Image 1 (tube, rainbow, N blue to C red):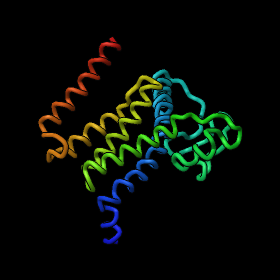
Image 2: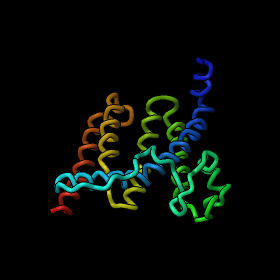
Image 3: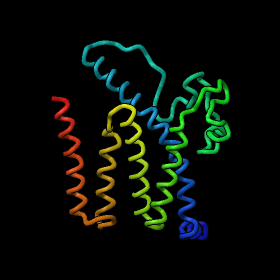
Image 4: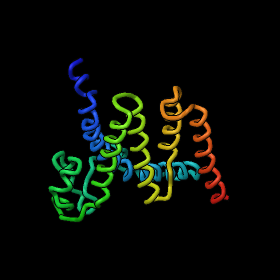
Length: 201
C-alpha cells in the first residue's frame, strides 16, 4: 500500500492522476449543474405549499443520485459505457444513442475544465491538501459559473461551505496570509449580499 501511495504522490504521476479524478468529478458536476436548481425549486415549492396550507401531489424522488441520468429528449437511461468523461461524448458524436438528439457541448466542456483544473492544481502545489483545496475551489467555481449562467442564482449550498472550507484550509497561510483570507471572504460575501439586497428591495 505504501508503494502505491508513493507512486501516486510522485511529481510525474500525481498531476495525471489528478487529471483523471478531475474528469470524473466533472461528470458529477454536470449532474450538480443540472439537478441542484431543480432540487432548490422543489424545496421552494414545498415550503410555499406548507405555508399556504396546500398539499402538493407526490413527486418522483429526485436528488443528486436518484434517478439515474437519462436523455431529456427520450428518457433513455444513460449506461456506464455512455458516461465515460469526454470519451463517451466523442464516441456518440454528441448525440443520444437511442433517439440521436444532440447532447450539449456543455457536458464535455465541464469535464475538461474540471480535469484541467485538477491537473493545474496538482502541478502547482504538488501532492497534499493545498492541491486538493485548490482543485475543490475550481470545481465549485465551475458549477457555480454554469448554474449562474443558466439560472442567475449562486446557491448557498455551494458558496457557504466553499467559503468556510477555504478559510479552514488557509489557517496556516497555505495560499495567502490568514488576515488577507478573512478580509477577502468578508468582502466577497458582503458584495454579493449588497447586490442581493439592492435587487430584492
